[in-house]
Length: 287
Ligand SMILES: NC(=O)c1ccc[n+]([C@@H]2O[C@H](COP(=O)([O-])OP(=O)(O)OC[C@H]3O[C@@H](n4cnc5c(N)ncnc54)[C@H](OP(=O)(O)O)[C@@H]3O)[C@@H](O)[C@H]2O)c1
Image 1: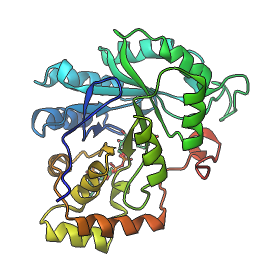
Image 2: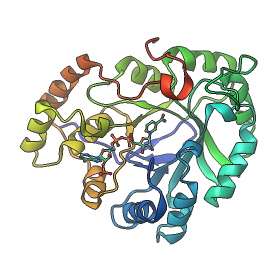
Image 3: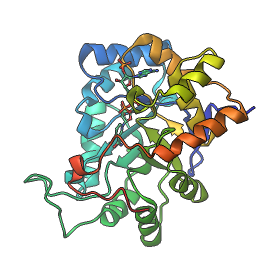
């Protein structure tokens, strides 16, 4: 019976929990309470945030309030396309705001935008230049470096031109957007695929997912999350609701037949996050 693992091991030898708390919109007192609940009551041991989420202050408060020691929590954050020319400056901002070192410092999008103007491409800079600067970041500030929203082609360009292999590539991965070729490419190169929007905010809870959830007497979210982890993809569900924070952390074993049925849903190729809104560039259709 295919069973989800509790951790993955990154290419630098560090363990990362297979379920991380996605903190987008976790802000203010409610956000802090949700994150402390996730850590103290629901056994989460990782938080995903980003400079763009504008919630580092809340994450810092949660890290202070939780009973879980800092060294047991995997903390990842990201720089925005307008911040790509000076990753160390922005890493220092992250450390200042979060009040601690970063476990994985990430490129949010493989596009470079000028800080001024509305999504104006900076033609004199690129993600390879940023990565070369990130490779030199001191380990006491960030333990590892990773990327988000990279296609196979962009990963290959990065691998060809630089020395350090990203530990993670965080992308939209769920039953209706499996992106199996990208997952295979990442795994072949020892890059952990990590799923954002892993339940597509519940919009993919179709009859197949609901039927499997009924059979296993669990929540449809657990089916989506467990399917990803079973195929080797780390997941980052977000919830502000205590019962869902708990259920999303509790992965389940699935039958081979469940995996096959969920595999058929990939044909829908339903993508809920567009690259155009944040970057102005529509590049997701390339391999
Ligand atoms: N790198 C990137 O470009 C990128 C892009 C998008 C997201 N992310 C990261 O990925 C994380 C997760 O993605 P996401 O928040 O967009 O999507 P998601 O985790 O698929 O969905 C979150 C939404 O679904 C609801 N929900 C949570 N658990 C549920 C369940 N078991 N059943 C039904 N509904 C449920 C939540 O509502 P309640 O809060 O009311 O429970 C929330 O509105 C983000 O928080 C962020 O950290 C990264």
